Image (cartoon, rainbow, N blue to C red):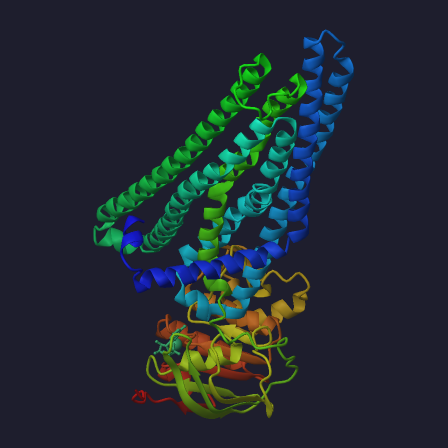
Length: 568
Ligand code: ADP
Ligand code: MG
């Protein structure tokens, strides 16, 4: 921090400031979702402060009556009424805050899920899955404090002390002046320590995200690490990452303690000043004219206001880390909401009821980072037949399929579906089989139906039969009801691919896209898969990205893609 104050801002800091503005915009856009509730909370907070002033006036009246030897009961009863109403309003304030937070979190979750669906695998490939899931789960939770506490409370910070100081000024001008004088000092102290805490918290979220990403990677590579005896080394690496996290946490706590310490010190000094002033004024020893003529009730009232004058500052200080947390969470979630993927074309996927005819006319793709994904490509995939996209690795076969699904941006040329320009991506309308079938916890049957309870049994059975799942299902312990583990524990790679093929058939997709479906299969499994595919492809348009000669030879048409020297 000290460095950035003396040295000119490095370009990196510029970018960081820019990024922070982006995150601020994200936060305020989300905040607008719950603006009504949030303002209602703030209004109740102000009402509560006024009710407290009423209580303080009556309580001071009761004490003053006691001192004067009169009956305090009317004042005391009034004070109790104010206190009771205030408790109710306080409850309403907390409730409005809670609801605002819940509303924002629900909105962000939905928006994040939509954004993920639009961006598709192209996005998840480029981002580390540990960081993504920690942003989606913890990040969204961390938004809560900001919207439920910090935002409503920060709207009280200026009006409430001013309002109460004005009342104090009326009752006892000296006390009012002390309150007014101490407030700016408090604001400066809060801002200074708060900024430090915010910087520390940002670093902490970063460390946590890196740690989650690293842990995720290492878990997936456990067998490799064990085989090369590298686990011990990795353990040390994780331990030092955890240590760095601990140190950051302590730094945040230090900043937080410092800020609340400073706050309490100033508030206590100001309160003592008011008390002293009141006592001196009452005893007649107060040397200045201001406020010396105040009654016992007015003096006590000014003194009783002290806790409430400083309350908003305390609450902002207590909620300050909520803001830092929310900024860090917005940063983690920002990639999801940046419009880097010009892919989310408008409109729902077209409905495909018969095997379609697909044409690429000089279709090209350049990814958002500037990498060329596919050089202009033209080919026709006739209806009801199978077409192989054949070529070396990196030539853009997968990208061509992603263009159809809307997972990669079409940056040149045109794609036609049944001679009409493709208006919207085909995700949701075409079947998809990737390199490795993603299987879910559940039975073989559920994995084919993808948990769609409305899929008729007959469709599932026919799909399982055509995709060659029945062939091996008979030898599974419970047939189609055999439960599969994560990543398909219980079936081989080739069997898993046939389950994936059955999905496309069960949903009766007339267009099936396959991306290197046999890349991880041995020769025999590949042959079985090709046999199943040949049956499944009848009456459907099939496009397969492959570099397997066996798959290519099983297709009706072959489109050869060639690496071309990329223009500078
Ligand atoms: P193939 O499937 O033929 O092996 P791809 O379509 O996967 O080739 O990739 C084509 C080119 O696009 C490669 O140079 C690759 O690095 C690049 N590429 C693929 N996916 C992305 C992505 N999500 N972002 C940026 N570049 C990408
Ligand atoms: Mg590929």
